[in-house]
Length: 65
Image (cartoon, rainbow, N blue to C red; front, side, top):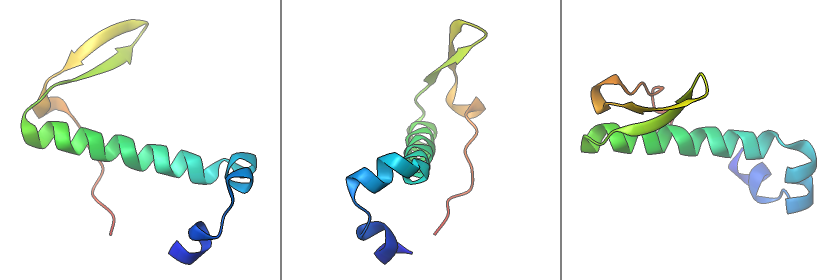
């Protein structure tokens, strides 16, 4: 699967969009995981308002290998 992604051109990635969506979702999960581990809050947009989320309330998906 890694080889398939390495051979994808920028134009192909933008026209399909799935690779970009996957990369963004993975990056968000990693950022949330790091904030939680470091004990740092994050900011979320909820119901049109900015809300601070305490580290113990941050939910992350299990890491995939």
